[in-house]
Structures are given as structure tokens and as C-alpha cells.
Length: 342
Image 1 (cartoon, rainbow, N blue to C red):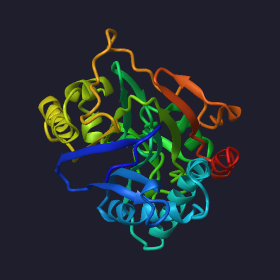
Image 2 (cartoon, one colour):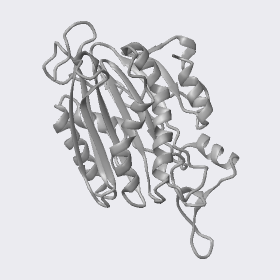
Image 3 (tube, rainbow, N blue to C red):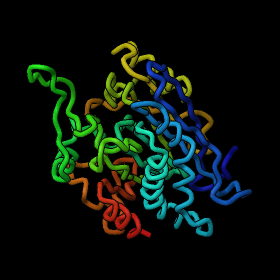
Image 4 (cartoon, one colour):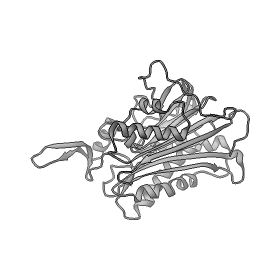
């Protein structure tokens, strides 16, 4: 498939790689979706990573059904711009619907979910858990498009869980010794947001952090991966390991570097997507910046409950225009902020 040439036209190249330890990682690649059946001008792409726990059922279900729940929340009769504006709300609704439907099955497994929708140079990411997505743009400028919902590292999520009546603490061994990462009790889950996990109580929610950005016409590279990658490599190390390489080889090298650094301690999955201007034949040549150790995160230090619609305006950060961000764990707040931009 090749998009029509003209202003804003681009193409995608992608690759994926991974190694299994428990076999609970899954990924989704759908490069040729259509908003309007039969109309190639309405094309968009979807990529996702799911890192399951306590079994594979939630990850498999999400791979097979999460996208259809999101699409069912979007009107088929709206144009591209309205569709893109409605997408954040649809992502929130789709994640919640997927969680409700899966829990009706009575299974106790859960999963992270990072779903990436690419339409032209506009990238929309919704995520629960810790399967991170980073954006590498021209000049080596890195930007984080997700928020890790790990209780160990995310103070605001810890506060939310305890304020809701949950207990956050480490695993207690005999003798009172505490070991391992912070967990939510009951259940003992290290994550504060996921799909599934019906046995861990209402404190673990499926409401995703959603971010929408527009790339410049130079394009960029997305790296979407499970924590088997991010526990071994920093954002910068993952990006640096594969700059200048085609997407398929890039994904393999990121996985190889993670295994070289930490060994196979967990399932390891990586999806690399290049967004390339139509007049370029190869992946964007992403060159390192002089100051490599500065990660420019699109998620600034703000409360997760704050609305990031920017009052109808967009914020330009380097070669990326920020269109929308919402990280509230409250369903009403997430849906309201998403709908208020329509």
C-alpha cells in the first residue's frame, strides 16, 4: 500500500522481534486499516504490544478484540479531522469495554496494553501498564508517549490507589522481611492499571493514558516494547541501538541489546515503526544529538488528573506538535476531556 502523494502524505515501515520466557507477550500489527471501506485515502495503521500476567488469556483477548472495541466507539460517517479528534475518547471507551467484556469470562489473568494509531503524521497512543512507547525524531530528540503505571516508580498512582482504599506494600516473607517491588493488595499486582485482573479489586483500572501528537514532515521512529526491553535498556539506549537501520533489523537489534545487557529474565517484545515522508524511499536517518542524555518527555511533571488538551491550542515541542494528553484514572474525567476537544 502507498498513500496518495501530496502534502502530509507518508508511508510506514515496521519490524518486530522478541524472545519468550513465559510466553505471555503478544503484539498486533495492522498496517492497512481503512476508516472508509474501499477508500485508500482513509488509510491508517495500528500497532500494539500486550504483556500478559497470570496467564495469556487477557493478552490474547486484547490482541483480538481491543481494536474492534475502539472502532465501535467511532462514528463511521465523520471526516478525517473529526475522526482524529474523536479518537482519544474512543480509545478510553474501547479499553474500558474490553476490560468489562473480558472480566465477564471469569478469568483472572491481566495484561498491559499499548495501542498506537497512526494516521498520516498524527500518532495517537493509549496505554495501561508499562509497555512503553517512545518517539525518536530527526536529530535524535527522544520523546516519551506513554506513562509507566508501575507502583514502584509512579508516586501519583500510589496516591490514587491508597486514596481509593487500596494498600500498597512489598511482599512480606516469614519474619517480616519485605522483598520485591511495591504491589497493590489484595492481589499483589505491581501495576496500577491493566486490562483484566478481576481478582485484584477495583483499585486496578483499565483507563488508559492517552497522548496524541503530530510529527513534522520529516517523520520519525516509534519503539513500542514490553518491559523485558525497558528493564534492560534506557529509552536512549534503545533508540541509539538501532538508529539509521531499517525497522525490521532495528527491532531485532533492540531485543539483542536488551538480552546482552540483562539476559532473558522476562518475555521480550519490540515493535519498531518508521513514519516516512512519501518522497523518501528509506527509513528516516535519525542521527544522535550532541547531548544524548537528555530525554525530552512529552509527559511533563503534572498531575495525572490534569487535562492536557491545551485549551484548544497545540504545543510545539521540537519537531513534534502536541495535540492532546490525558492521564486521569477517573473515567468521567478521561471521557470528558477527550470529548471536549471534539
